[in-house]
Structures are given as structure tokens and as C-alpha cells.
Length: 161
Image 1: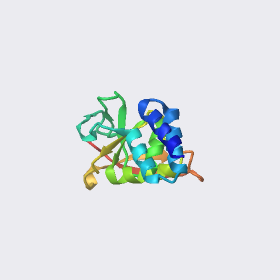
Image 2 (image 1 turned 60 degrees about the vertical axis):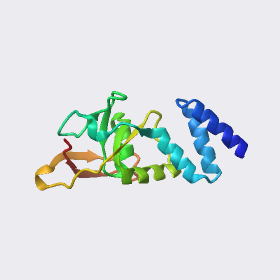
Image 3 (image 1 turned 180 degrees about the vertical axis):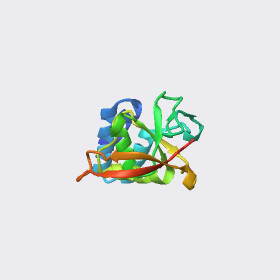
């Protein structure tokens, strides 16, 4: 098993764009009980070196920013459940997540489907505390289809600028 795992690791590292090689290595790590290494490899795979706070703001209302490295739109989330929803919702594969939420999200992927290939997770600082004039009602959001009973909720989003 160690030799097979070593071979999978070499192939995965030699071909960073080979999604199948990464997934095979990741699955082998989990099968062998090496959850810490699986978590670290998942972090390396989806981590983005860009700094969310330094990205150009696209809209004060949505809080979206533009990543200069990949030219994609990056949206910041504040809850683990929002990450997959943002990825599935509009093909936004660049998601900025506060550090403590990123840790929780990566751990949650050890026992759940991995994000799609090309997903980029940008570590961000948590937003500053809100004051009443910073809050704006965006509207009604229909939850992700993956939720068992689905949900309809009103949401307040901080305006990032």
C-alpha cells in the first residue's frame, strides 16, 4: 500500500492539472487512514495564492472582486454551507473564505464530494463587525438543491467595499 500511495503521490505532484491523478491519490490517503495528509493535499490543491483584500472591487453591493491571477470573479462567504452553494449557483469557482471557515470547509470535504476541478479557495480576513448602516437586505435566496428539504430564507449580506 505504501508503494502504491507513493506512486499516486508522485503522479499527482508531477501533473498538477491531472484531476484524476489527484482524486486517486486523495482517495488512497483516505483509505489508508491518513486524514491529516488528505486534508493538507486538499488545501494545496484548491488554495489560491491571491489576497482577497488586495483584489479590485467589482461591485460595492455584491462584494465581488476580480482575481488578477485567473481573471475570475471571487465572492466572499461567511458560512461553510455557502461555499458549495456559491460554486454550484453560478459557476463561481473562486470563493473567498475566512481562515477559520476554510479549515472547517476543508475538513468537511474529507467525507463529502470534492469541489469541481478548477475551484479556487481564497483565504480572506473575516469582515469587520457590522453596524446597522452597513446591512442591506438583498432579497430572498432559494437554497441549494442539495439541501434535503430545501429552504427559502431571507438573508442579510454585509456590503464589502
